[in-house]
Structures are given as structure tokens and as C-alpha cells.
Length: 451
Image (cartoon, rainbow, N blue to C red; front, side, top):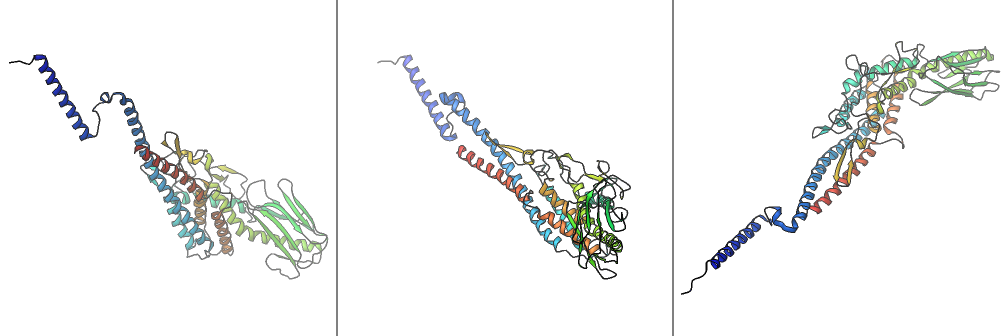
């Protein structure tokens, strides 16, 4: 009987063991879907697998960033949409508002606008995953102070109301004529002179008249002065017109009409028997007309200018205040400090593009910019306009109160409308929409690559 050799038995046992190992490996592959438990078992494919796994990990990181940025952008768009909608509705409320003090120093519409302002501030203070969305790079700092602080002040720090009052005194002057002096340099002429070289009050632009023989002298000198001189008496209906620039940059005309009536009506001057008498009557009418214009248009323009002094602090510019007391004779502005003036905006105040304040890498070759600052022009103007309207106070006994309210209402409404060259809230929203499209497209590419 033949007996198998020991070598042959060993080979058979080894083959069985190898087959058993292969079977176990195939079962593991079927169960786990993996070719090998280690990269070494992949052979020549291990380099490709390591590269693909690194790419998948990188994509996972990008997808996480995209998801996070997407949430922030969605919240920012919601806040901006609501901000613009509320601002536009409030514009209509202001333009249609009626002057009716409800036993206090303000109308009910002013009080309602103050509540609306609170909601706008809350929108600008929106936050997501521990960071404020409208603070630029200062993501841990709430961008806008409370309306109570920046309107009424905080401790020793002045708020908007105080700046409006100080600026009003500086613009009206002690005589209430908008820092102008009405004089008669000769018996037959009337002059207007700015009381000092300063940024306050009315600024002389010029005067015109069609009265025969009358001479008009354009503004000149330091401080500027202009005059109207009569060589003969005017005819009834003849007009003398004076033009001024107001503190908010707007201009207004004061038209005085010659009349035979005595006493004359508003914005009229009585024709005298002689040029000298007529000049004296013009001086009286001009003084009265200036006082009315100062108490209405000038006061409203002053409040708007004070609002700009307080809110236009972008690019590191500090708030501007009247250098006083005394304020009614002040001749210059001075920087407000952190110790004496509330800062309404507390976020990042750099001068670069606000979008660059927040960056996110959504792909190896794609960086998305989606930053925003609450002091951007479109956002600031809305907050500033509503704050000024809500801060101005009136006196029930003031005969010019209604006209002053109308002048303020017109200016605030115009500021909320803006002009074609100014940034709009929709401009900010559109730029952020571009970032949303970019990250969404990047997400689609990553999904395809993952597949």
C-alpha cells in the first residue's frame, strides 16, 4: 500500500488554509463593502484610495462651512427684507403724519416711530451660532446700542436729543434769526450779514429783484454780507427774493412782495413815500420773515444736521458736537468722545468693503465674502431718519410748531426715499444673494463629486 509523503500533506493543508483565508476575506468584503482592512491590502490602488479619502474629507469640511454660511446668509436676508419693508411703511406714516400733540411734546406718530426704531435695531442686532451678523469683523460685539441710550443718552454721555438741542441753539443764534444780522448800511439800503464765520445758521447765497433802479450786492467779505438798495419806490407786486443754504445742505428762498397795504401781510413790505421809507419797511419785513423761516425750516434742517453729526461716524469719524457752551454764539464743531457722547454703532468700523469683513472658503478655489456692517449708508440713513423724527420735541404754544413739523416730515421722508446714486438696502441684499448663489453652486458640485 502506498503512503502519501509528508510534503504533499503540508501543501494540501496550506492550500486549504489559503482558500479559507480567501473565503473569509470575500465574506468580509461582502459584509463591509471594503476591499481591505488596511491600505497595504489594496496594492497599487492604495495611493488612489488615500487621495480619494482625503478629497472626501476636504469636501465634508467645505460642506460643513457651506451649511453654516448658508444659515447666516438666510438670516441676514430675512433681517434685511424686514428692515426694508418696515422702513418703507414707516416712510408713508411719516409723510402722512398730522401735527397733533397729545398733551406732551410729541405727536402719537413720533411715539409710534420710536417703537418701530426699536424693531429696526433688533434686526441689525441679529445673531447666529454665537456671532452677530451686522458687526463686520467684531462678531462678538452687538453692533447697535439701545435706542434708549442713543436717543436719550447714558449717564454723562449725551444722546441724540442733546445734540439736536445744542445744534438748534447754534443754528438759531441768540436773536432767533439764524445767525444773520439785518442792518441798514445807508438810509436807502438793507443788508444781511452772517454774524460770524461758522458752519451754523443761514448761509447767504444771493438776492434778486426786478424793482427799477434797485441795486443788489452779492455776498462778499468776512463774514459774508449782501444788500439791496433802492433808488426809487417799487410798484405793488414787485418782489425782493433772498436765497439761503440751510444746515442740512438744502436751500430756501424768502420772497418779500411790495404792497400798498399798511400794515402788510405775511412776507410783504409796505411801499413807503420815499426810497428810505421803503427800505425801513423792507428791513422790518425781512426781520419778521427771517424769524419765521428760522423757526420752521431752519430748525427742521438743524435737527437733520444734528442727526448726521451724530450718526455719520463711519470710517472712524467721531460724532460731531457744537463747541460750547455757550452754543448760540458757537463758531465751530468739536469731536465727541467716548466719555461724553454715546456711540450708536459699536461693531467693526474699518474703511474697507463691508462684504470682506466675513470670508468663507466654499471650495478649493472659491472664497465667498458675506460680511455686513450696521453703519452702512442704507442702514444708517434709515436708523438716523427714524431716530431724528422720534427725538425732536415741540411746544404746544409755538405758533410755528405745525410748519416746523411739516418741514421736518418732508426732510425725513425725503431721506428715506433717497436718490438714485445712494446705496439701498436692496443693494446689500443683492450682493449677499450673489454669495448665496455661489455657495449653493459649490454645494451642488460637492454633491456630484461625492457621488
